[in-house]
Length: 261
Length: 263
Ligand SMILES: Nc1ncnc2c1ncn2[C@@H]1O[C@H](COP(=O)(O)OP(=O)(O)OP(=O)(O)O)[C@@H](O)[C@H]1O
Ligand SMILES: [Mg+2]
Image (cartoon, rainbow over all chains, first blue to last red; front, side, top):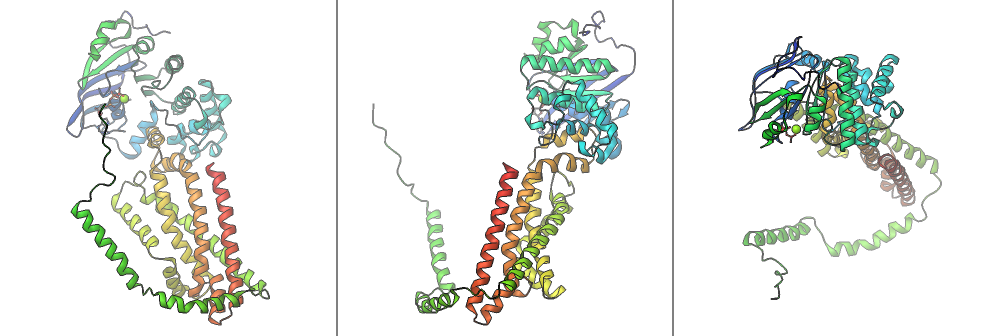
């Protein structure tokens, strides 16, 4: 993999190009507990950034806040040049459509085919035509098939999602994200439910596809070897803030250990 | 090792639960009184019942054509009423579903309407529709439709509510509007349960449709009431037999279909 591109870069030196993600002073409370207390993070275009942190550190909350799946309490969020906190209704949906989100649980519709689930990725631009593969026009179906091909599942296009293995389901979820023609992908522990071999494979697939297309990626993980192998940069959350931020190649095991201490 | 003493077989009731128990017993006893339950009258009525039963046998078989025609009418009423009721239940259920309708006043209104449809018995709806659209099967069909809505809309809403929120969140994250969540994630997942509910409504409407004739809302019940009013028990028996066959046939068919859908 080309994960060590930034090997020689000094700490957090930004590569050229605009930032696809700018987070400033992000705060999120659930009741009395402050989960995020002023997170600051910038991710430049095309970078693959791993987000690590102990259970309950707020990784999922942070990722969800970026698309307003969870409503943040304070701070500024700029996603792909849009002020994510100001958007509502159609404008918010249009921004969400530009960002693929891969969940820990694949979150496929179980009774629908893999192809229908991938077609759903186009729902923001195609509307009702993307509800089901049978409704989709020829071009949309062809594009969905290409996305399934990218993740190696074209032969299972008509298999129901509930009949797919965990690894296959997560591939379909990645294909659904690709169907969005995303400029950025957020992934919340995308391989946490997979066995080590499948996890490595799927993580490599996601990272490879993103690099091919120049898609910016922020993914959370508990696997340090995934963070160091597939990301350009590792960011750690601790105590509701960024505790640690360095190029993946420069991350020492001891420093990573401290995040969880 | 010392022998372990078993706990007491029955726990001693607290004074409050004892009082509640006594109260419940009193209520049950007084309800027999209130319902005019009388062994003597039951005893005196037995010969009468035996006489009616004797006259019912054998059931009349000279008017099968009319019996079958009104049986078919009952089935048509049930089918049309269920279909319309299920159709109108869909938007009502979406309005009543928290995940799909964030506006709580609208949600509360939808739920109140569904509760009204459910709690008022179908016979009362039939009385109202007979006044509104006149005697006949149309009034009965409308009554069955409303009755179906009270039942189907509630269970549709529950089926939509209890579906996994994950796929809905994934679609929302992809920029889907609420209609997209409904059509692409919620409905496909809730469909088997909703079809089963609809079949159940058809069974219910078939049984209900039989009774509606008693208030002039069409179907088998009218035939039965006329026969009973004319003391023509053999003909009444033929109607009852036909009703039995229809209800059992619909229940069996619907049960078989539901097994195929769920299994
Ligand atoms: N909807 C919610 N309501 C209340 N508390 C929540 C909610 N979502 C998350 N939390 C709390 O916020 C904290 C951060 O949770 P979050 O899921 O973001 O952590 P995480 O870093 O993703 O953890 P993990 O590694 O276990 O996935 C936890 O203490 C959690 O209990
Ligand atoms: Mg998490």
